[in-house]
Length: 186
Image (cartoon, rainbow, N blue to C red; front, top):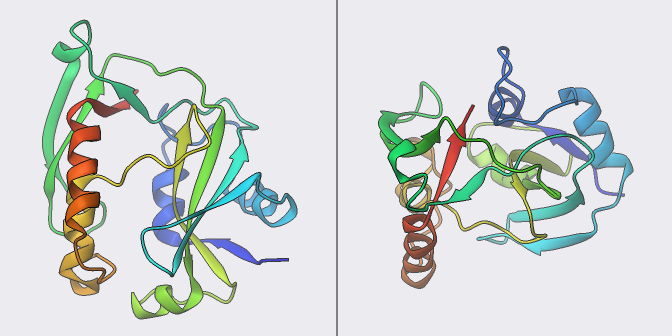
């Protein structure tokens, strides 16, 4: 059986001290980690690099989909700002919906990095895999990584990335998806 832990980076984003409507609901960080270790995934998706895997699980919470399509009816609710995911990263331009609510997700898809990769990034773990994020989706498939995340990854670990070079085709597919979709905030 694979051992999985929640990284501190993911813990602060998925289970913030002040609860937010667009994070994991009805579940503690400890219960989430325990469930990932006890329940085999429905399927495993290949990540963007050999050190990355995504485990597809049925959503056992009231967590809502993280992404919504942009329509004529909701476009006026898009907001943007420069933000960093942590104090170590440079702020980048992000956008999101305000004042909308997504449907409950059918799947939770934790994004896992190997112990070796997390050590390279300065976040050593004792388990085989560490959760670095989670997608909340209607389909049991990966949502394309945001273009800015791909760029950050290409910059390297000293800029908060993973050191994986930019894949032009994957980047263009990501742009096409994110031109038509946005995250939301409660």
